[in-house]
Each structure stands twice: as C-alpha cells, then as structure tokens.
Image (cartoon, rainbow, N blue to C red; front, side, top):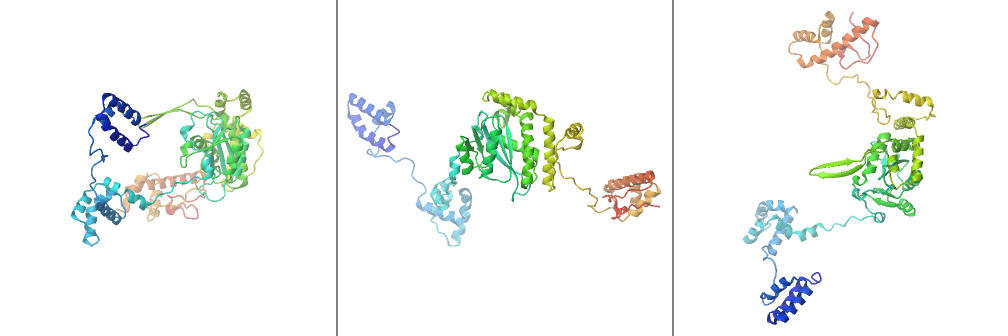
Length: 518
C-alpha cells in the first residue's frame, strides 16, 4: 500500500487519525494502529511514534529543506553574466565573475546592488549549474534522439558477450574491400563468413557491394557448409541491412542480428579471419574488374579447404581480469574440421563426409594452387594481363623441391611481397672531396697500399682546416671501391660499365665510363 499512497496522502491520513488515536481507549488505539499499518505500510513501532507525537503548526503539512539562499534577483543577474561570458561552463564562470562584473559595471552595462553582488561572487559552481539548469536546457534545445531506420528496428543488436557457447550454424558476416589506398570507385570485395562455434570460414568474391549479390553468396555458402546455417550476425552496412537480404533470411528461417555501430569487437571472430585469411592470402592491393573476381574465386576455392582442414586456430576459453591485467586462457589449437568432428550437435553422417573429404585432400597441392593464384592476383594488382595455365605434376614437383630453400627468398606470398626498389645511383649529399678529388686520386695512385687513415692524414696536411674526422668513413668507402676496380682490371683487363655509385664523386662521369689513371 505504501507504493500507492503518496507522501501527501499519508500525511493527511495521519492528521485524521492522530486526534482519535490520542483520545481513544486502548482498544480504539489498537484498531486505529492496525488500520494505519495496513493502509500506509508503516512499521507498527513507527506508526505508534507518529500517532503519539504532537502535531506541528496546527496539523498543517510542514515544508522540508532550508530556506532558499539565492532569490530570483540573484538568478537573473547570474543569467546576464552567463550570457555575457558566451555561455561558458560554471567552473570557468566562477573564476571569471570578479573580472567580468567589474568590466560590465565600468562600461555602464550592469549595475548590481551590493547584496546581490556579494551573493553572486560567493556562489559555487554547483549552485550555478543548478540555477542555470532550466536556462541551459532551453537555450541548447532538446536534441532529437538518433532515429533508427525501419530495417534496423527489425534486426536486434547482439554484442560480443551475448554469444556464450552457440551451436555450429551461427555465423558472423563482414565485407572486406579490395580498394588499396583509394576508397572511391568500383573495386572487388570479399564476403567473409565465420562460424562462431567452430571457426569454419567461407570467402566469396563480389564484384560490387550489393544486397542481391550478398543473397546469392549466402545461398551458395549454405549449399557448401557442412552444417545448417541457423543465423547470421552482420554489421550496420547497407549491403546487409536491406529488404532483399532480410527478406531472404526471414523466408528461409535464418535469424539475423547486428552489431553495435563502431564496435568492431562485437564481430571479433570474423574480424580476426579478415586478417588471418583474406588479408593474409590476398593482401592489400586494389583489385578491379571481372578478372579479379574470377581469380579471387579460384583462390578461395583452394583456400577454404586449406584453412578449414589444415590450419589450426586458437579459441578463447576464459578471460579473467585481475586488477589492471587481463588473463586469457585458450583451448588447444584445432582446425575447424576437428571442432566439428568433436561437436555433439553435428550428425554422424556429416562427420563421415568430413572424414572422407579430409582423407582425399592433398595440402601441398592446395598450397601450390594458392601460390599460383596469389601470383595472378599480384599481376592483376600491377595492371598486367594474366594467363592461367593448367596445373601439371611437374609444377607440383618443382614446388615441392623448392620448399626446402624457399626461406632464403624471404616473403614467398606474391601478394605480400614488397615492391623492389631501384638501385640508387644518385648522390643525396654534397661530395666533401669534390674540390680535392684529383689530388686524392694522385696520392692513392702513388701508394695504393696505404690505408684510408694514412691517405686522409696526408690530405688534411695538404689542406689544413678544410676536412674533419667525420669524413674519414666516406673516404674509406671510396677507397674500397677503387681497390675493387683495380683488382677487376688486373684480373679481367677491363671494367664492366655500370651506373656511378653514390661515393664515386668525380671519378665516374654521368655517362658511366670508367676512367683509370695511366
């Protein structure tokens, strides 16, 4: 009953029963007390204390709180100086008040009574906020809440903590753009689908971002999955949240959820596969046109088998926060196929089919196909035409033979290899020995066995104060080059023309011709 009666109603009931209670007999007091406890919800001891107390102010309701310290005049003065300060916050306004009031009064814009001025300068920042609350709300205006579209209202939001331990069939979907460094224009895209329970990943190449193409990709993936597609979790892109995609999912009994805008961790599983699968095998180049989609489709045909059957991945078991540290524990690494085989939710017929497919797969052949398709992707990214030859056993044998020494070449994925830099043959700094190049060469020709330090000391004695010790290393590099050329001349009788080196100075003209002293 206490939740039904308001404070004013309880006070009126107490005033009506107090006189009867104090003037009644013991039996009447017990009946009145039971009535008040039943109606108001007071404890019996509290009701006895309230009814036995003396009424205040002739039984009129008493006001609560202390008397107001700042009247309407102080509030109006505060509004004026707040507007004059360009509506700054109360903490800054309190520090500004003495200076601002003095400036306004000195120019005749404001005249405050001494009492109002004293109360205004003594006002705290919290009090200013309280007195200006209504003013700020009206001045700022009520911001309309961000409205969600009708399509967004149909799709519930799912965060990263709402997954728990789902059964196979709930997949996160994301789109990876192969736009390079330029977002604009038409470019290829990859639709990546990742099963939350097993990590099974499917990739589909799309020519453009379009809802109808997304539906076709989902339809094709459903037929290739080893489990039934139960639900999908998408981001807030228009290629997913549209009537075409939602209509297809609702018609086929596929649950649809969406992540929060700008919270990529809500789709942590597919975001991880975007990097470890899509970017790892395709790279970050810009891909355009139908040929790119064809090559990507062939690449993903081999990638899906290689990743899902031969690439173990970690899965988070628990995450514990201890103070400022977060400790994560993971299950033993398993391939998506192994997780499906150990899942009780997968039928025995499906497990038997997975074992048959795994027994027929050759991981080396798949990796060779991936390398070939990566080479084609790299060629397309550079704007070159490609020719896709038919694979032979000789190609596979050569690929196998090169595995033992492939690490010598560094990065073996053509899509990840950095562009080769041209050899630098120009000088970026001034040649410190340009003025003495002929004399330096004459000193060395007189005694080719002398060291760089001896040659540098002789040059410093001939030109005192012109050179410093920090230039010794430059002279030693040049001296090493001269000795190499002299050795080649003695062995082969001539020197092959080459581009001038950065340390050659005046010895090598721009034409590349090598000049030797006679």
